[in-house]
Image (cartoon, rainbow, N blue to C red):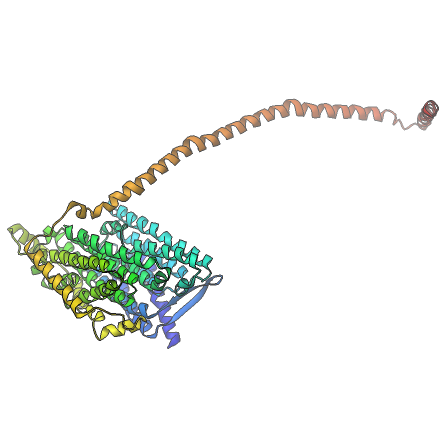
Length: 612
């Protein structure tokens, strides 16, 4: 069983990676793309169940003293099946929606899912970095899937660059972990030396907050809506954005060990839940509304990591995955049928497609926190723990809960509002939603309705024991009742009075514009200045040096020709003349050699007499 479980863990990552690579690079797999993709996703569901039950661990040497290691602990055992099931359902819906470039689309989706599975099971920082890089690249390719549209490619680039800038924190954390002496295993990071432990925590928090679209980097989620709806469904529910919150839950002991990272994380999540909740209320596009709500709901997961309730955060993450995948797939179905995601154009769509409408209604009610649906109890499980840490932050979370009821209520009012003009009725009647697009919604609606049981007795005790925090759920009956009444009251209020749409919230707090003013434009101007410096100073300097070198070489050539060569020639001529003089006594006549010897002896005698 152990070897089978280990093989299943490797296959959970390797199978979608291999299939995804083949599909994404093949030009002859259009017809087989969807069946192959669905078969691989279904196999991944089976593999995820096997590894969740057996909880294996595998490793291979990566570099000196560091392994490329995967493990399925209690937290991963909860999330891996969720990821596999959501991926399968999203791919089923995609099979009914994506008609062109299916091989490339399904291949990239499988690679995206494989990177998420690798992230969930990563046991060391190198494994996590490897998964993080693939996930970022796949998200860029999927958001800009319709690459002939420059705006979509630009949106993918914005998301990629923004998250990559935060991802640098992981590299800083890896370097600090090596310097800290505790190794690169995630479980050992809290035991690093005190000074380096702070650097590790700061790097991981920065990377996780960027991936989870928390403030101030939330705006990339708005641009990511340029991708196809199935991409949004997977990216927002169980993959990329969720992985940011998951990472913080995974390193919760490290956050607690630093003393500062836990409260910083809590407040970052609380403020994001509050402010992005306001942003969601103001949106007039359903995908923008859902995107802002994703950042807001992930804020509760981030708060859970800071408050130390891994069980509450995991339950909320699972409940949110089912809810958000459901709502994005419903939005995609309406977009396919009507060609719009504007809320004004979705009036009355719930009545036109009842199955989609009722499923989306279940998702919206769960998102609102209406009892007893999914996000009601999971949200209160987080807030109850936050209350123990900070009453002020609890009030922030409660206000964020009210806002979640407001934006979910706004969506409900629109889709159930009766159609007015004749033209609107004809337009809605002409639309078509395929069976493949509708089938996954039913399963996800059941998940959105029932996932709240994870935070309610007796299932909550099982979840808490699974993640190693027995007795972690603390929400009292009063807190649950207050939350339920608040959510219901806000939904009824929104049904009677339109929700406000302030410009600052409609524009996502001006985050992207602020980043452009504070970071992008100064960076571009700095690049322009450096480019001019390169052109006018460095290039000219190099050109001047090369021109001077050429002139110096020409002068040296002339010196060589005029002086050195002549000197050498004259020296050779002198040597030749000396040779000629030396050859004259060499006559070959013996009597002349005797005469020369006598002369030499006479000269020697004279010299001795004169100087002797």
